[in-house]
Length: 247
Image (cartoon, rainbow, N blue to C red; front, top):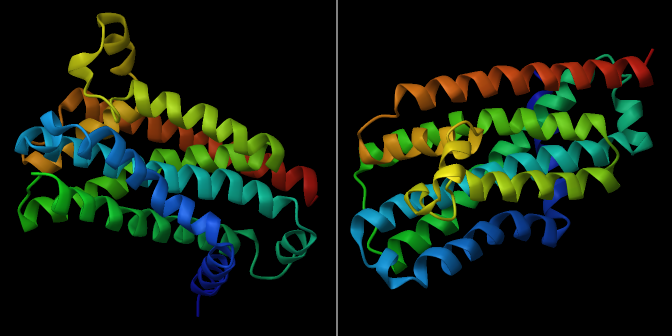
């Protein structure tokens, strides 16, 4: 039997034993939803605008869960003697890595619950069951490059550096990608920059699924390009860490 479910359960239990770590992942995107969407009646009272904003905040929730859980989480694991011992066992490092990724996915999905409830109960957002299903799938796909980003940070620096680095990367990317404000409000220079960012491409992918219109081909190409680039970087940092610490 695969050891990945075992490591996933271990990682999940370890995370929820620190309430602030779990609550931060779940509550932070919801707080942004309340501040940027629910409190603005011109957005929350308009069905189209509220639906779009709910999709953007859902994407922010997924990205945050992946980047923080994998960036800070992997860096924390690497600092533990127990983690170093586990990587020498016959199961190898991939079981631990798989458990960490699955744990991040669990929290990404859990973070969607309060955001979805806020959108359903406090705004005029609406979507069909089919649209919700395709949006959930799109959110998971859109989170893949950010999972690679988190792994890159986690395997390339210590915990004290990983936490501020994750914050410095996440929030500018989220803002410039149109997750807090729609890109239609951006000045021309910011909109042009936004179009090549992974967060903007992920936004178009998610909103295309949510509205049923499908993502633009350009955004899809950019998303694939970032996934390949960040995936390659994640593999490089993982192998470099493996070579340095376990030769």
